[in-house]
Image 1 (cartoon, rainbow, N blue to C red):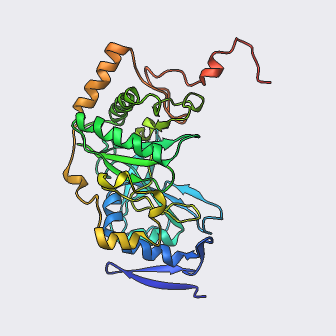
Image 2: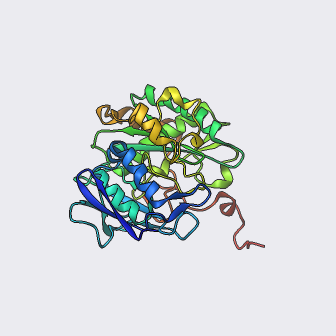
Image 3: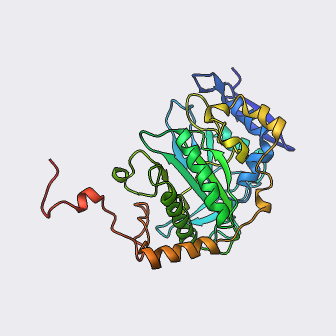
Length: 341
């Protein structure tokens, strides 16, 4: 077994240590397989990551070993890989790597990075998102087919609001839909628009979709995770490898494919062939920039006519003005002084 090898990637030489290390024991995929995979979808994965501060999900020993999320750029980051400074909800800052070429992606893969989690901003303006990202998350009792039905309903809502969504598999049980937007709104404004979109979808399919933050209230419905638009929340980037035994990948889809595609159709072995045949089916996303006025008008109407204000933020966020209490409804209903048994 070779201790190291060098790959030529886009004119750069990238060192790969322990290339034969098995990352996916169930299928025998190695670190070298992961690196070659990212080369095979290079333009697509770079399109999804270019100029975006990116959190790295690392599995240096493979999917059966320890893992961690790395937000700050690695100390040994090459000078040719740029970074972007982002602010966390706490007010602290960090410089994250911004992969701008395939060689940067392969360099990260050498560190055991399987999944890339890009921020919805560009490094030249990290306060104004250029994507509104929607995560349709199946809850217990639901499955991917339920997420598909929710996504098709979501497409109608988006269209009525003048928005164009770009769907992809999560690589797991859910679906993601990204909406490219003008860089004119802050994180809270984009989140407010997402909540309004989710509530409208929920009104149309109350038995199938929910925006309920608390798990005890979701039931057997697809959770429209509006908090994926909150600062420091990221979604797996397009073409990212997911850390499961099958080595599925987050696969961009055409809307015409959503009804029939399944997450298991796209993995480390099959995606290179699909990419060679179809290319990056989201390549034109940045040419379809949308505006949020209609969604924000819907949010204002919800507040004015239905009394529907903000929803809870994730726990690591500071309390926001107008945000409801961050306490589970079942706990909020308990008499004062009641204790868990």
